[in-house]
Every structure is written in C-alpha cells, then in structure tokens.
Length: 208
Length: 208
DNA sequence: ACGTCGTTGCACAGCGGTGTGCAATGATGG
DNA sequence: CCATCATTGCACACCGCTGTGCAACGACGT
Image (cartoon, rainbow over all chains, first blue to last red; front, top):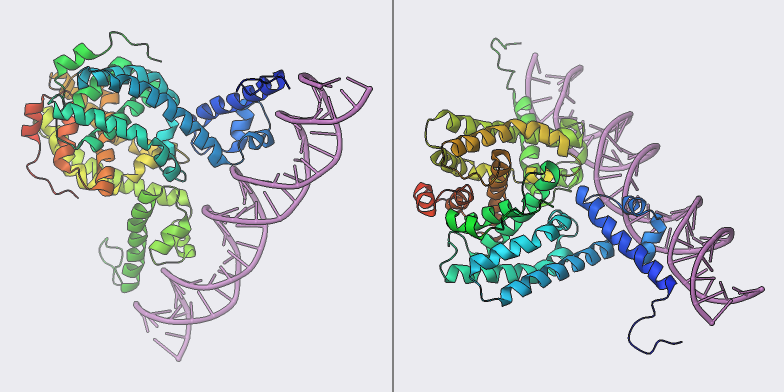
C-alpha cells in the first residue's frame, strides 16, 4: 500500500494487463477495418489471445466498439478544437483539419461502416459532438462567404467528412490518394475555387 | 398450347407469380436499404409473404442480391450509355447523368453498403462495367481540361459517384438535398468552377 | 370435375457468433 | 513460499439466420 497519489498503481501486472487491453483495441481497429462483421474470435486471434480473454476486458462486443469509438472521438475532438480555436479563415482551417485528421481517419475508417447497421445508434450518439464541430466550421465558412451554400452546413460537412474517409479507404486499397488530394477534393466540393484550394493544400503529403 | 410467338405465356397464374416476384424484389430494396443486414424473413414479411415463398423464387440470399444488382446495373448502364453516346462536354454530360440517375440512386443506395461485407466480390464484379463507364466519362473530362486532375479518373469518379449516393441517402433521412444540390456538389469536386456548375445544374429538381 | 402448381405453415438440421462457467496454469507480488 | 490474479482451454446454452423437406390448401387452367 504505497499509492499516495491518484496514479492507480502501475505494477508490472497492471502494465501487462493494460498492454493486452491496448493491443486488443489496436488490433480490433485493423480487423474490423478490413471486415466490420468480424467476430470476437477474429479480434482475439489477431491479438494473439484467446476469445475468453477479450471478454475479460470487454464484457460484450458493444463495449469493445464503444471503447473504440470513444477513443476516436477523443482524437478527433483534440484535432478539431485546436483548429476551431484559431482565427484562421474557414478554408484554411478546413485544410489544416484534413491534413491533421488524415492519418487518424485512416485508422478509424471502420466507424463509418459501423455507423450503419447494428450499432448505428450507439456510435451515432458518441460521434454527435464531432459532427457538430464540423458543421459549425462549415457554417462559419458559409457565413463568411468562403464556402458555397449549395447545401446546408450539416449535410455539406457530413458529405465532405465522408469523402475524407472514402479517400483514406481507397488509399489503403489502391495507394493513390494522399492527404493533399483529399484536401483539394474536399475544398473544391465546399465551393473553394481551384486555385486557392491548391494553394491551401499541404505540399507533398505522406500517403499514410 | 396457343403460344405462337416468343412471349412466354402470360396466363393469370404466370402473372400472379411474376407480381409476387417483383413485389419481393421491390420490397427487398426498401428493407435492405434501411438495414443491409436484414434477413430473408424480414423481406418476406414486408412483401406480405412467407419466408418459404421467397426461397421458392430465389434459392439463396445471394441470388436475391444478385438479381437486385443486375437490375440496378441494367438501369444504370441504360442511363449511362445514352449519355456517353452524346457528344456534349464532359461536365454537361455529368450533370445530365446525375439528374437522370438521381431517382435510381435513391432506390439502389443499398448496393453501396452491400458492396463491402459478405457479398462484396459478387456485387463488385457486376458493378464493374458501370464503374468503367463512369471512369471513362471522367477521364474524358480530364483530358479535355474540363475536370481537374487532383485525383486519377478512377478514384475521382468513384468518389463523386459515392457522393451522389450519400446525398440521396441523406435526402431520405433529412429531406434537404435534391438533384440540383447533388449535381452542383459533384461538379464542384470534379473541378468545375462554381459559376458553370450552377449553370449546368437542373433548375429546381424534384427532391425524390 | 380434376390435375397442376404457387403458396402456406410447419418441421428440421446446420452453422456461426455471443456470452458464461469453471478448473488448470503460470507468472507476479508479498 | 504462498496467495493473487490474468490468462488459458475447454465446456455449455442461447440465439438468429439459412436452407430444405413435406403435407396440406386453394385458385386457376383444361
């Protein structure tokens, strides 16, 4: 009993357990990313543990997905709040957002598939705040006449958001698109003129 | 025995059978559109028929999906070949395509969800020709400097295609976007300047 | 009137995934 | 050295869906 602070005792046992838990989560992103219908057994096998162990950390499949989603929401909001706080123009802010979210979007692309079907409601609720932040950013751009108004901010932000994930996904299969292409494409559909879109996009962009 | 021509005898029995078959197909589009994981039982119930009857028309679930896909491919190619044949500019052709495909896309939006997961390969093969036609149209536009080149034609066409479906889907839930909005949005992301995109889009567009 | 045939309602077996229970194992901490 | 505990490797029941078999029923065609 030597735990004075709030640190919950990092013994070697606790650490090993946390590592297993994290490995399960990491590997679950990959496995479910390739096949959203993969079962707990597939995740366990990919993580090098037995199915029973996974249930030891996550009582139900929904718990696993929820934890994954919470992780994603945390990373997304971290990126978004940092950018929304800046007083840059909306198009520049969007470009920065896509660039910084590109690697993250690739990892969490599964959430877009998981959003429909079986866990839709649970995930949708957790992803709500992120959606709102995006809609606000786009709405700001529309009000300052930087973005076009051919669609309401909510629909436009969701569509552009979806395109980023779709491109990240196709990058995994065919390897062509990179962060720069995703930035240009989404800026274009937001109504930014091509010249400025190209100027705002990151120079070369590592494709993963 | 009074069947002289190639018409396969349209007795009242044959017609009734064809009607149930068509009703199953129609209703399957709706049911699977709302939940791609719906089972044969759900489809049967929605069609006012017993599960066993569905298996009478479609020996397996895959047969149902395949028939649905073949239907979709037929309608899509009908629209596409008619447009690709015209000598209009690529952006005008794309605008015409989106306008005419908009109602169809709404009905067959499920195919985009079904494409990943479980039946992906089977559907992907059938949808291949449509993909090629779209890629050709976009490539033509890129060569004539009507569309931007921020993405290869294959990726760009697929993304724009996906956006049409995504907008048709969100139209079902929120009711806001219409064919005009979809046309403008996709033209923008193809690199068409906003002014021309708006000019090419259909005037008012029925939102369903 | 009688046979055909689509439909029905039930039965069944099979499969795969979920979630749980429990004894055994082995490493860690006291 | 001993107790704890995460992990393991089975076991099991439960569920839902698929696909099939078969005996009715009933409408339609001849």
